[in-house]
Image (cartoon, rainbow, N blue to C red; front, side):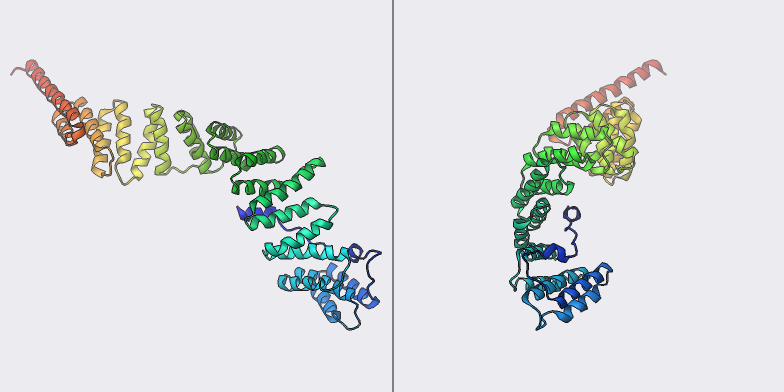
Length: 416
């Protein structure tokens, strides 16, 4: 997440520090020689010739003929040149030297601005903050941008309350001017509120994001926020809306929505969501997802539909649990022979949680197939469970009765 935030809250682009921005009527004057070199260095910078600009400035810095203001301006320019060259440590050193001189407010403010941003570029957020705050004190325009940079520093320092406060200032200022807040600011605000576990205000912020930037990730973020508040009705409603808008794009999103439908007693809808995800190739047809799909069909009593995912999952499974589930679905459809085959396969694989139930089910399938000896053997296995021994014994009696009855009918039909 932080990687995305760094992209969203990127440090503002540096503007080449021009003399017109700094030299006011009340500012000291540069000596003619230094003025000429600084202008030449700016020309070199405009041509992306930073090495030439660096040499020009380094050749005259701290010269005995320089005034303190000359040196302050030269170090200020060198700080910018070093930044352009990517030597951020040298940039910081140069910009810090500027404050060793008695400089006017305009240059001081420009230097605080640049130094704060260089510290940010070095990920030295604690060092950046005092310079950004000083810049904010003297900034008449675009204060919102400064608030956002300060907020970014606080976020990186895990000072989420301060980050949220500064972002709110930037956002409120834009709204007061009938301007749309920047997406990056709202995004970092909702991330800060999430870290503070302030779900109420986070939801309000996400709704603002949706109002101005209606992207699918914000719909899903809103759903997630409601889930954290355990407001499952709203969570489900938003995910359902996301599905209708075709916003679901990952396996976890499809499975999450299906899980909520399943938990809320809507297994048919859960199976539809999973089938849709599998059809799109987003939801993998692995054991876990196939089992979930089959469970949804089974809970909805759509046993025929459950057969395909159960067979596919059972083929991948090492234990017999899914074979037993397949046997149960076939049992519910009165497909006794197929059911008994699946149940036997599951019991042979092992790893079955409710073996007694499986033996009882197998015995009943065999009774319906009139394979009474095999059925009795299955019920005898179930009878080893003390808790269900009585039930199993009753089935044994029934199987023996049916066996005797069938034998009697056969004798009556063919007395020879």
